[in-house]
Amino acid sequence: MSRDAQQLFRFYQDLSHLTQRGSTIAEYVWIDGSGITLRSKAKTITKKVEKLEDIPDWNYDGSSCYQASTHNSEVIMKPIAFYPDPFREGDNIIVLTETFVWADDTFKTLVPANTNFRHFAKRIFESGDHEKPWFGIEQEYSLLETKNKFVIKPLGWPSSGFPGPQGPYYCSVGANNCYGRAIMDAHYKACLFSGVKISGTNCEVMPGQWEYQVGPCEGIEAGDMLWVSRYLLGRVAEDFGVSVSFEPKLFKDWNGAGCHTNFSTTTMRAGTGGMDYIHGLMERMSSKHREHIELYGDNTKRLTGHHETSDPTKFSYGAGNRAASVRIPTSTAADNGRGYIEDRRPASDIDPYVVGAAIIDTCILDESLLKPLYEHYTAWKAWRPTAGIEE
Image (cartoon, rainbow, N blue to C red; front, side, top):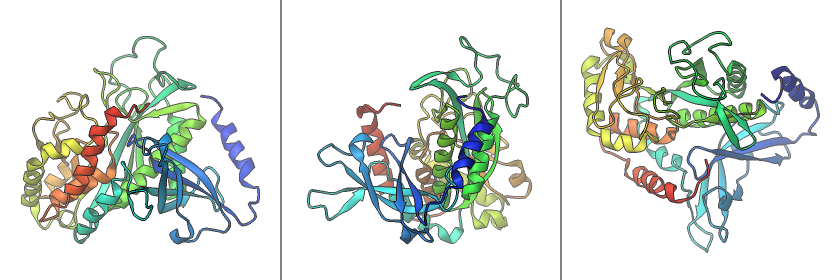
């Protein structure tokens, strides 16, 4: 770690008392062409921001973000939500944006940028509003020691070889098994300050691996809050001189990282459909399994049927079963279907708008609206390996 946590805290405190003469610093955040990396830059707004309409559209160099050519480089950012900034404090804000590019050289029509999946998902979320879908997303990640650009090893691992076998690290306490708690705690508090609905955290099965949970959130807010929480995590880790990896499988014989997605509807929370309703959802999800796997992040190495994962080639479910595609909590089964389900297939590098929309489309909607989102996502997924994206 580059600095002591208390020194960092005092550093930010020392700056927060300075007057900004009525201006607001707005940190605009966007998803670049990699589909997982976040970027940001700051803009001065010469008043206190009270509502979304106070925040202007802006642009950035998309040719440096795997999203545009040098000759037509501008990507337009349109604000969709803003949050208190835990790093600058005061009235300063973090602005989450959707990204668009010009359709042609007339510059009259904007179309979604390559990783703007929210634009397509929004219609699906809105169409499922009548069932008030709730999501709770479990974001797993790994902390990596770095020297400048170069990754040395996972946090807490020996300088060569591997640590002792998995077993003592999950929810561990003590410096011999738990690595990175100060980073986790700083991130936790940053999320709470910003209004992100973080509901808990724990260290995971692999040493140096952590998880936090966002939710319950209704509808598309779950995706917004997960992306902001990822941004906050990256900023906190940056100050500790540590990098964050959302790679779903760092090492073959160690647990991978997922983004288990918990889901419920009004009907499920009331329990009016009983377990028959849950079984009906499982039949629907089974029929869309191959399509879901295509949309659920990079699971090529993670879903193996081992290390608490399911077989990617077939759909399965069961009460309390962490080796299934979908786990039905025993509390839900015991209460005759009153509760929620956990989709365990999503990888740690998912786009939450895509996963949430796929679940709603499958479980709630009578007529599928997924095709435009599916086509945009799979086109990007096919393009990505050819783009020379540096991880």
